[in-house]
Length: 541
Ligand SMILES: Nc1ncnc2c1ncn2[C@@H]1O[C@H](COP(=O)(O)OP(=O)(O)OP(=O)(O)O)[C@@H](O)[C@H]1O
Ligand SMILES: [Mg+2]
Image 1 (cartoon, rainbow, N blue to C red):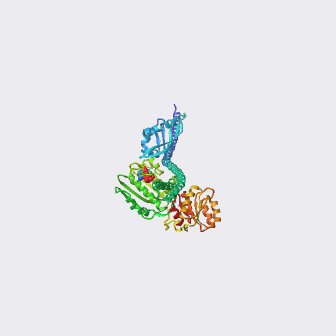
Image 2 (spheres, rainbow, N blue to C red; image 1 turned 90 degrees about the vertical axis):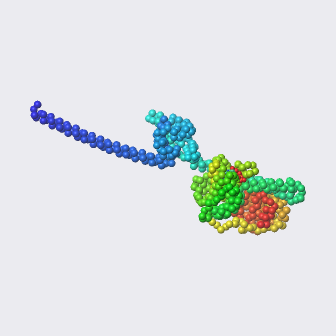
């Protein structure tokens, strides 16, 4: 080979090496670029995963994923918290280990359905730190490329509060229905008792010295009076008692009641109060509030036969909108009165029934079961509510929640301030009552008291008589009457022509009477059944 040809070959080789080196460099650059891209993709992936984690941990839901072998592969914070476990304890663990044998047995058929490709929703209740909690859970299967489920997503929501609200609302509605029923029955019984006690009283007065008066009439009259008391309790449960609400300084009322309460408790029961440092007013009937507090105290006494502690606490508080709705009240500030004892407490079934009339666990003759139903009626009629919180063996807390009121100087009912004119015996009375038997009894009572009587069956008849007989001084009328015109309307029309007319409304339907009282404070009210003496007082007050 000549020198020339060998150097040409060398030059070609060098050129090839240079080409190879350039290609190598290009691939290195491409590789670096690819690595860069890879790095930013993983960073983006990590970022997106972190974001997802933040979202799933923040939303108020429990989210998890388990594979077809029922092993958890993912769980958000809410999910592990729900079962009281750290996150690491859930991921990689079998379902049964996380939710427990009992829980697993109650959901395993839902899991099987979800793992066969069905979306399943179910609700369950379990114990969490001693409390019962409820959740609604949806399992959504994840399908593999062949369409066969490879695992399952779980989305659960805590519905404990919603369930509690629904139960409270249902309870309030049930009490409302019982109240209406009771109110209706009480109304009818009032009329019957008016007839019974009215007639018995007349008989007694006619034969005061007859042997049988004492033996037969007196017990019957007493029974009728007891019946009237019972009706009164029922009316207060059904929110139909006449209330005289004024602005009451609740702390002061409780302080004034302390001695009386302490006296009604044995020495083995410690009694204390926790009252606000500044006055806290509620617009309620003070007498009814006192009797509600006494009822609580006596119940607490009965719940602590071996002694214990009773505390009455008064404080301002707020009913959140959802809480308030469960009691059909507007949300906002209220006055809270909490009465707590360390007595025998109650199970949940008892707590659901305590406010129902005639519910008692006390021995026959020891309790009528009307104490708390009266408190319930009073609280509701006052624009508030009453709740109970109790545990068997741990004691009970009853909370009266009453509407707040600005302080007012008015302490007496306006009705008492504007007492109507009096009508002395001898004054002509127009008696308006649709029930003939009631009318007969009241007429007799009026005659016995020395009042001459004219009678009418309804409002129109009464107006007719009023225009023709000028001497009528008193209009004594029933409130609830058939025929379109009630007692209130009759009173209003009669007064238009005869402003000096003395009007007395008789009513068994006390709520209506109470309402009319605030509308027409110049009218006298007489709750049925009434005695002759009460009738006389209403006419001559
Ligand atoms: N503080 C309490 N601790 C435990 N149980 C209570 C308490 N207060 C009420 N109860 C239960 O609620 C029931 C109803 O109470 P409520 O005051 O309505 O009627 P009562 O006390 O049985 O009879 P009454 O008050 O008419 O004499 C009671 O029988 C009792 O079982
Ligand atoms: Mg009681």
